[in-house]
Image (cartoon, one colour):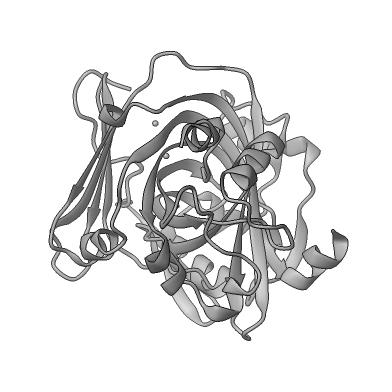
Length: 335
């Protein structure tokens, strides 16, 4: 048990922005003017004159530098975008210039986690067992303040798994992923609060996205995400976490990857490279408060039989590059 706790603290998976009173929801989903873009036959409202309206995922970095001169773009200048067909024409990777996030990792019932993964995926990856009968899930709240897709909020609920092609050694695998800063998972739920983010995620990545309200608030001590039940319009899930004070400003480059099934039934994988510019973590359970109701997402989370909160990550400033999905076989062959 002691070794397991050390492994959990060594690095847990998956990786959402301050004023003295509660802030208004950010980013704002209400714009004075909207334009329409079409993705794979879907007509989507986007902010008129926004990055996506003008550049469709490929804005010149010179434009970003002019519009947001406070953002360090040096890392993005090292990355190359390519035109891809991902169910629609786009560019990969997608750039996220200024963002924040919080992640809480909990133990969960291992058999339940396995039952939620398709058999085809389970042939390649499985939930990491951290002690008998218990796996891990990561609940992450993101605020994408400025990115190629304008701005939006997102909530991710994912199972922590081994890397495809690697043995599943539970805590040992977890330590290995932490040392390599290459984390793997299977995405269970991924609500977003803009139609552009929903359609791109569903059509391009076959991810379980749906459109709903996701309200973000913060004060001097904490940040709060409120996830609205899209059927009832009521607050369903509340994630409130502490702002940790001892922040590291040493840039930390990590990779978050997921295994999935593509639209044609083939196994795929996707990944995001993230440059964490300000970050801290804690194992104090009091740093995270998860509020559940009788809504649909709350009911889903309750069925996971969440247990101990084993790690909390507070990342008030990070940048990211999200790559288009690729066949999993290409990864296995390259390894």
